[in-house]
Image (cartoon, rainbow, N blue to C red):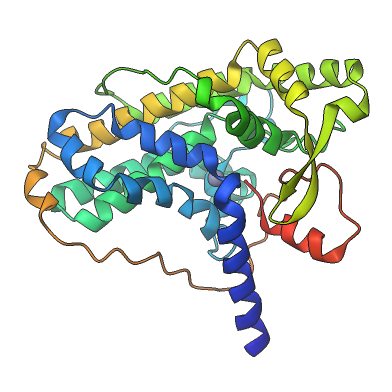
Length: 336
Ligand SMILES: [Zn+2]
């Protein structure tokens, strides 16, 4: 018991140290989405922009402790056969009837979970529950962001089936971290979405269509770059870590014609649209009165149960398994 407590302590300590870079993109996306909201929502969200930003990474933290969380972040479309993105039932119950809940959970429930979280957020708006509004808005931002990442729509989520291990963190963390200061994030005002369930599926289809180039471009460039040009070393939490070089990262971004930037921008707009739609569907409650209301900002309690089985193991910046057990442990704590 004492050992478990200790390892959890180490876990949370390390994850706090390490998320400082790993979840950069989620934080930035949630934060930017706030600025697209209409004045009626902007007050509350801007007042709590720090909360929305910091809690953008909660769902990823939960994956290690909460049963049923991990599969909310992705969908392995290949598991459902050809053109699955077009054929899969858009509504949860239809999908369960066709495949069983167990099967769906095995291969990921991302799109259906976005719908569920949207409904929960709508309810929180109806009830004018400040804490739930902010927490669910932050969660929803995370889930929408994930599904706009092509590698969250495939079984080959870390290039492990194509000899490209490390590509997950490269695409969704390294590229944004190095280059997103120069991205154009102007997305305009949030707009109402008639059918959020269909909208998230459209995003999944589009993300999955982009998957080929995510993988192919990395392959082509890898053939062109010498290993010592492809990688460089950086200090990460006092550890000298092999990372994709700046040169390779920039070349990848250009060869992909700014795909990462487009997907990030799309996430920002979509998140604002979903928040706005939930608020409209809740009857446009007056949020100004919530602004003055105090909120105990506690950090989310994570109850530890049996270890979830389907956490996606994809290393962060470490692009090869580390022989040093301590470093391996730390890198395994960091998964975007
Ligand atoms: Zn996630």
